[in-house]
Image (cartoon, rainbow, N blue to C red; front, side, top):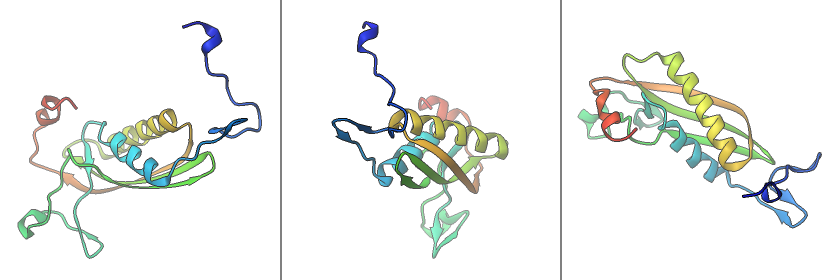
Length: 146
């Protein structure tokens, strides 16, 4: 590939996703899915604790509700305003991993992945840790290619 085929940056004052040919808009729902998938790419982070009537329920497997899983997707919300996105994630973290360490890794990885895949600037990534996943072997994710 030669340098003349490189993508030119947007002119000053022009938003990402906009060109002389038109605009590209990315749904909040798409950004939510990208953020959730990016979060599980981080070791020791996974799906949020199950919720019953709006409350997190740890150990809900005994009640027949799905259990906390590090292989499932966490809950995610996204607000897209023009070229900026604000994200919120609800995750579980493997015990005894550092909650601040894993949260920071998730925040940075999600911000980078969403920016790279969409071109949106991510202004905020709020993370709520809803459960600690105990009794799970750290080797399980490595064997699955995580």
